[in-house]
Structures are given as C-alpha cells and as structure tokens.
Amino acid sequence: MGASYEINCTECMFSAEVGIGSGMFWNRRNLFYGSKPDDEKPMLEDFVESDEIRKRAYTLIKRGAILRDFGSEMYYCPKCNRLDNLFYFRLRTIFNKYEPEYECPYCKEAKLERVYVAEMADGFFPNDECIATKKLCEFACPECGQKGLKFERETMLWD
Image (cartoon, rainbow, N blue to C red; front, side):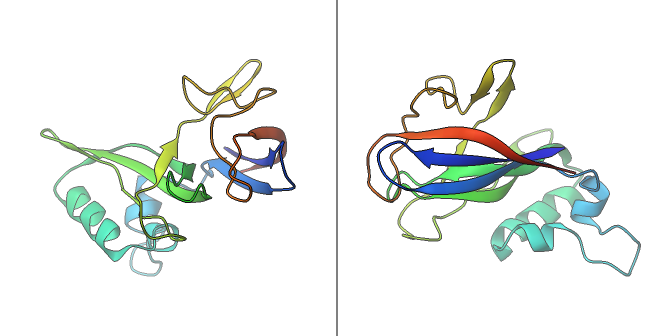
C-alpha cells in the first residue's frame, strides 16, 4: 500500500506532493516480466526511464538476484534541492546488492539521495537526523533555498 503526502515550505509558498510505497500489483513477476506471459511489458519499463538501470536490473534478475525491497520513494538533489518521486528497488545476489542511482533530471549535476521515510506512531521520519512531521526538516526548499520543508498531511492512500 502506498500513500501520498503534501510537503510545504514554512518560508515560502512552495508545495509538492510525493507518493511513497507500492501498489498491490507490484510484485517481482509484474515488475520484471509483466503480468501475463507474452502480452504485457514489465512494469519496470514504466517506472524507470534509464535504459542503463533497467538493463542492469534485468541482467541481475536473469542471474538469480532476489528482489528485497521496492516502491515509490522520495529523492532529493543536494545540488538544486529538487524533490522527485522515483521507483526504488534493491536486488541482492550472493556476492553483492544493487540499488539504482538516479541523476537529477533538473540540474543534471548530482546524484539524487533517497530520503528514507518510515511510518511511526506519531508521524513520518525521513531519516534518523531529520524529523519531518510537525518539526522543520533539514532539507532546503527548491524554491527559496531555506531549510523549512515539512510533511503537512497525508493526501491520499493508494493500492
């Protein structure tokens, strides 16, 4: 199950909506092979724009990699402060693991950082150091550059 959240800046009028999680049809088969044999493309084709990332994922799956984690996640550019929703997945083999590294589609000068969001009883925390609910987040706003982003509210649940 996934949820969408509104993120606002406390210093300016910036607002964005991000989706976090996965839908009920998101599974290994649908992601990497398609939902029906020979008549539907894998969901990964729609979720990941990079041919290089998709090719690497398909190669690892063919070699027996195990899908450990996946879903829509929030990413942050440390260079231009943009937020983006991208598909996250982690593949594991006996010898290594693979997670996609995305280049910022806005500035094209930095690798995006995945913002770890965990649901807690009293809110959502994007990582150990930065509490997003009800307190200011340590990420700079993409509009004004000030550190004042926070999760405001859940806007939608999706499956």
